Image (cartoon, rainbow, N blue to C red):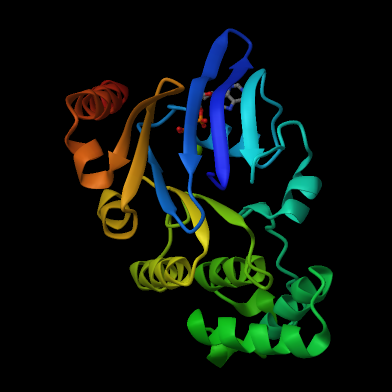
Length: 245
Ligand code: ADP
Ligand code: MG
């Protein structure tokens, strides 16, 4: 059975069908790439999965149980975590204590929270700033800290929407290594990214969306070679060129 089974999702904004019957299965332990040109419905689909938007039709099952219609808090409790929703870094609290606070909120005891926090700070290369107030960290470091906070108690499935956007290349490397290692130890992800080299590198399988539908689903390299996928990206490029003209 798939960890997450998604089928026939529709989400309408007025006259626009942002998601138009998209579906896919995500296996336990998979790191699935979700790609597609701008406006193809990736973020909207993630918002439906995390309960931030209500779908107009379709089905989402987690471990075979229907979860469509639950709110974000209920879904987070079940382990469906949309990252960067939790944008609250406490600026006047140290980086270390930010993680501790999240860990305690997620139900860890103090010893476990402390152990996890130190592991994560190490993994995210934030040890040297752990005692600084989070407000003193750079934008990229704050992003890594938020990232760490989400993993104080690992979710069943982590939904990442463009985590590398506007992140310094060095931090991007730290972040992608973090995702790779977590996945190697069994963490399930859906990763939305425009950064094809990273998607190719990290994701064995990808789903490409266009106009709210799934265009292709399979091994990442194979998906990227599909004529329909190439055409969809060419369409996006033309659109961008027109916008700049
Ligand atoms: P992607 O993440 O693939 O770039 P989105 O899911 O953000 O695509 O958007 C899909 C389509 O839905 C786009 O045409 C976008 O303009 C539209 N859209 C997204 N959110 C809203 C909203 N809250 N209200 C109206 N239209 C929206
Ligand atoms: Mg998006």
